[in-house]
Length: 206
Image (cartoon, rainbow, N blue to C red; front, side, top):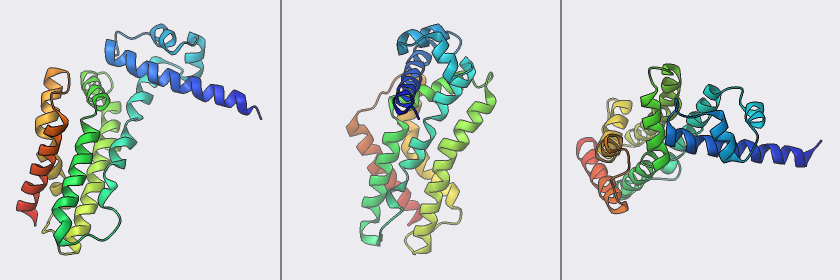
């Protein structure tokens, strides 16, 4: 087994992914060529095609690579006991992590890129939503249902509550970023949105 060869291949694969992400975000899908990606990744175009058979598959790979990041940030409340006394603190911490993940510049740029190409790749946009944001909402809904089962929240529809929670957090920073093309918030803004979102959510659901 050629372990060194496998290691070089993995490094080239990662370099291609990183280069493709940068070029797609700068030039858009239509404006990007495999030559651009190969040049930035410092590999041959043949190497790029060896890892990804065409530009569409490479574009899909970089888009879908972000989905696990979204879901993994929802696990703050998954373990350990939670009581009424620290509920707002825990929800505020969860809200801040949720905001951090979904307002990350790369996620915002990819979101704009996916929307811009939704007519061309509707299935990719659907898969990104289902595997990323929708899965994150389902995980969040399960957390809220568990808190409701413990008597800490009053919830009839946990998934709707998860949508309300995310809407309270994301409406301002994501809308600004989507319309202006870049993040407009500071870390202090995210702290404020997280605290206010958790407080308003609990005012409705506790």
